[in-house]
Every structure is written in structure tokens, then in C-alpha cells.
Image (cartoon, rainbow, N blue to C red; front, side, top):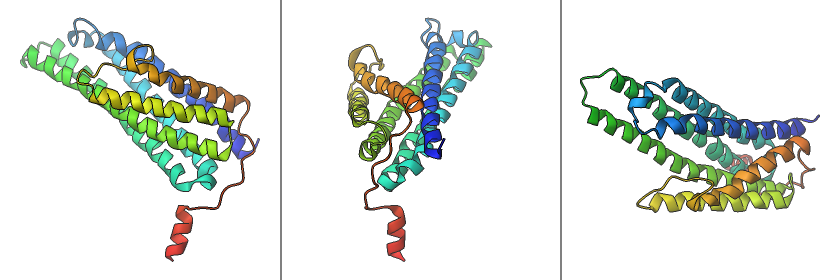
Length: 244
């Protein structure tokens, strides 16, 4: 197995690991954050929320490794875009996931203070908990924009290199545009409704969610196609050489 074949299969596995960790984190955290007696319930459900936060970190780490693995594969077809994918779908996405986990861990602390009957007034603790939840919602929206821009870079490079079928790369590029639109519209909606794959404008996220699972299994089973000839063009290396 060549290094590129190993990279293809590992990328597919990481897509699945990140997705499964994300789904499990939602399953664990949703009942806690949506409870009628929130934030008083956090003391009772602290372990569940902490585990959900750890799964968010697992998701962020798995997904952040994908563009790093793809960088040497993509580099001949657009070094700047390949680096951009590492920044947007790697570094910035991982930072956003870390921010979400941190907000959940802070909620655990607030819940513990609330449960101990602290001298801090209950309305104040409820306000702080609500602010932590709103911070999570805003981070999710920013994450959606960052993720979408990174996805557009990744799927343009896939389309250009022909490492996967062009119909699959095009599906991902279109899905990235729809994903971006869903988050931008929600940002400017005064009500800012929660995004869901099943309802409202969140339906626009569905094509990319499905495509990335199809891509994951494609890479595990098929790997990369023989790459198209790398086009001569701009790269960071050529820029450095010209400067010297």
C-alpha cells in the first residue's frame, strides 16, 4: 500500500470517527442542556455533560487531522488552497470545537455552584448559564462558516485533482455552499433558531452531511484515483524562489 493509499483510508476512517463522536456528544448533551430544570440539573448530570464535551474534543481532533493528511496530496494542485484547508478545516475548526467543550465544562462548574446553594443569587447563576449556552450557539455558527469555507477548498482541490470522482467532489462543493448559506442566514435571523438537519433552514446542511459519509466509505474502499497531472501554477515555494 502506497503512502497516498494509506492516507486515503485513514482520512475515510477519521471522517467516520469524527462524525460518530459528534453524534454521540449531541445525544449525551441535548437532554442535559434542554432539561426543564436547567441549570439545576447539571449537578445531577455533570458526568454526562463532561463526557459529551470530551467527545466534542475527539471529533475536533479527528476532523482537524484530515486536512493535515491531505496537504501533501493536494499540494501539487494548489498549495495556497491546500494550506487554507489546513487552517480552516484544521486549526480554526479545532479551536471552535475546543471553545464548545470549554463552554460545557464551565456549565458544569456553574451547575455545581448552583447545586451547593451558593450565596450567589439563583437568577445570576441562571443568567451565567444562559450566557454560556448562547456562547456555544454563536461558536457553532462561526464554526459552520469556517467549516464551509474549508470544505469548499477541499472539494475544489478534489475536483481539480480527480483523486475522487468529479460527481462526488462536485456534490461536496455544492453541499459546502448550502452549508455556508444555512449558517449565514441563521446568523442574521433575529430569532436565530437552532440548526437541525431535519427542520427549517438546517435542511440545507443535509447534502454535505450525507456526502461526507459517502466520501468516507469511498476512500476506505476505493482509495484515491490516479491523480491528474499537476498543473504548473502559483505556489508558496515558487514565490519564495522568485523573492530570492
